[in-house]
Length: 311
Image (cartoon, rainbow, N blue to C red; front, top):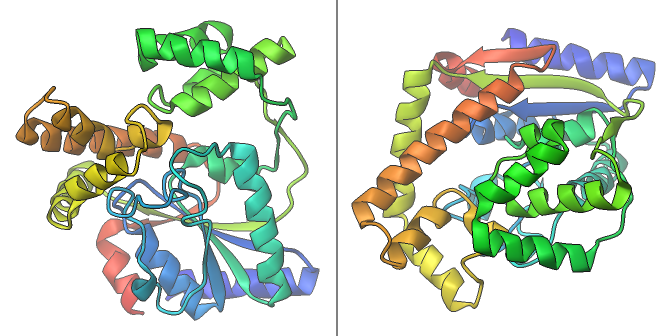
């Protein structure tokens, strides 16, 4: 198959030219990235690094569609279950831990496969973001958190739009932790939160999975049904019973936010499920808008994915 021939040639050229290879698997949620990453990792002696801003959290398995251990097919995975839902984890943390994992993978003479749908995480590694080293501003952080509690995520995000529209465009309003951190950096640094690009560290081979919108939305609807049947509601209840507050940024994740609203009596169960479907579809649309800006992606039509996986 041409895709695998191209990857093989890419790895050969990297070896000959002494370049550091990085295979990147990207695409919207429910597109089939995980299956493709396993196929490529198994065929090319690789290890997978998750680039998902929600799969980092422990105890959040069903809603994040985290690949369980038995399904990993013996392929080593990195950056899954690395922090508790109430712990802070920044883009800088992701980049640092990814670089550590990549170096360990190279030391084992294997190929790193970076797979995920969080565009900011992918960019931080691919484009070697030079992230401002500004320490946390705890007093300001508390003030911003209080503002969020009083006025909501949209109002907080509007503050960032007014101070730094470019950064605001990259961060979803519900990602309160990132919004607050961006405002911290903005206020502390007195300028915009510009993550400048450094010299590229890797030779990148990017593969994306692209579905017609209607088909992708149907895949999303089916996945939500599967998550519900596997016990997503109980997972949310368990998190709350463990003491993780419903206002934590982790709990604003798709599936958790909507079911918390149901548990609070703010909407019916059926409304919550429909909101998960709708919000996930909207998220997928934003992801595709982000990824269309990428150059040199080897796009696989979704209807050819089964053929690729069977090759």
